[in-house]
Picture (tube, helix red, strand yellow):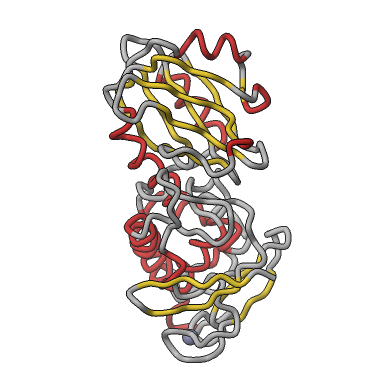
Length: 309
Ligand SMILES: [Zn+2]
């Protein structure tokens, strides 16, 4: 069991993050990476591109990938779901990097150089940008055009969690009788939410994680649709969540979200709303990852009055 002590505004908080390390980073972590990469890469020329681990490459060999991207100027750095998209100028295409579970970018020399998989060397002040991936589950790809990258994204992803409309969310939830938590985490339903933020979003929405997605009331969908961007924005402001050796910002710092969050990693602690102990449990459809919720604030059978559509 790993106990992590985080300090925020002088307050010491304890959390148990011994399980559920999969499916990191989520949308806020990738958005934080993109914001960190932008000033270092935007407008710079990729003087040299070096693939150290061909295993992560999709569709091209290391030499092809290097030839396709080397010498190109970076137009913009964007996020698409949990993808980092580096758009190259002069129709040189796009580099797409999926950090998946343990991938991350470093603007400072990485603390574990043996995990470096790709190096981008620019003509800018941050000369080297390293992409590291401990478990080698990340993906690195090159697409000739935004349309082709978008097509590849759309094959496996729903709308971005920060952009989905209330109507679209409602329509997508109606199509499945699975529990709401695994549904929120299904990237084909909406892109960007994983285990940590699903727990926070459902607590904020006062919805039990096992409620069938198709049975939510209009009021519940309203609360859910409001909670998704609110929780994600707070997490982006805190630069994401770090609970083990995994996710760090591009400067090698820990994200601060879990120092002040409500649910994730807080089994047995008092619910910040009602004071009852937070339950840590496992629910169907989540392959062993833990779920945290408050049985009083998120009842499995809410009063009928609030459950009408
Ligand atoms: Zn509660």
